[in-house]
Image (cartoon, rainbow, N blue to C red; front, side):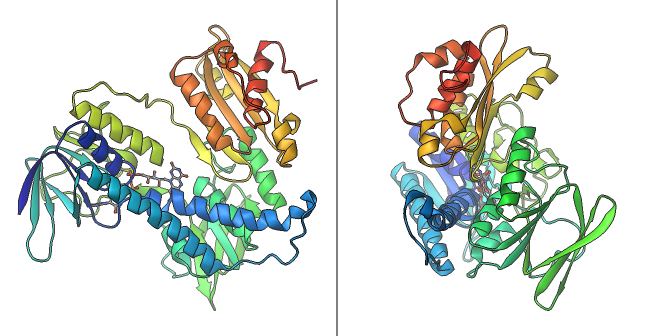
Length: 463
Ligand code: FAD
């Protein structure tokens, strides 16, 4: 069996399926190959299930704290099996949506593992007979898989990846998380909300190392207050498993330490998924397992593109999707509609964290003179109503041109509100232009206006 297409996409994650739908919408005959389920890591084992678990577990914690709003909810309990079922229903609904969209847009979907062969052919291994597709262009979007630390004891069945933790039918009573990045602090939030004893061991000196220093410090303080034990500059040496418990051996301040829990979650990052992706003698240039691409996302093999977690850059679903759109547009002979240089980074802790563009320190490192406006959310009406007054909004603008360069937020709905800044930065808006639009009241969004006003002679609600 065979077929000829303008575009053949391998992998139906947020990079691949978005690229395929966009290519089809732009009139290109498109096929997509997926070996597991449409939606990729994001819908099945990443963003969506994680946020569903955060939502359910936060609701449980908030109900226990509802007394402050005059609501008695003294016997609040949870059924972990039902929380998992809700998470699965949510992901199923979204996966079905993606499948319908692919079909409705006329994308041919092939189940199975796709392997790139010579002359822009792709083989899909089938029990009866291999299917070979021919693509004028191929987009590799095979994503990533959890990285396992190369230290002793990681092969224990009590050492989990995020995939394995999602699949558990019972909540762990105690959990050690190796790594203190975004995935770590989100899982810590979920299971601490559900009453699980959490220990985080992070090798770097701070949590969420890629985020602004102030945000990392505040997050550490907030998580500690929730009972999470956090050790930064803690290098894990190995894990031993005995009698149904795991002990992590680590070095902190030159001292050998250990901590024991039911399970260990290894959350030290993800590596590109290239298992079986390349046929014999067909491999684009790669570095540290990632496909190298040029500014058009084209690999060293002409007509073979790569996007998403498979290439260097941030490993985020919206980045993969945006790259997918830009590649599809290029293949259809169109100019790119998205500016890929500003990628918002979000952490769905409580409070949420979001950032886009430059921090004050990064601007200074680049020799740019900046002015910064900061608004503390304890003076924001909506935050007072919901008693979510913790946090701040900080805006970084170019001193000379007044253009917005970046924003960092740690407050309720930060992950939604950061969009305002992404639009501003990518369109070169100035502080003055951002202040022109009225913001509704009462909203967390008003905090953005106040942070901007701090740059223009002072916010109204700041002394
Ligand atoms: P993937 O989503 O990994 O999809 C690749 C697809 O290709 C998979 O379906 C795979 O089965 C398929 N495939 C692989 N090889 C082949 C082959 N040879 N043939 C056929 N099919 C193949 N990002 C965010 O932006 N926001 C978040 O809140 C967020 N939360 C996350 C939480 C967790 C716990 C994790 C693990 C990740 C999270 N991410 C988040 C990251 C996000 O999931 C990834 O960046 C994103 O899914 C990458 O998209 P992709 O299309 O490149 O690859």
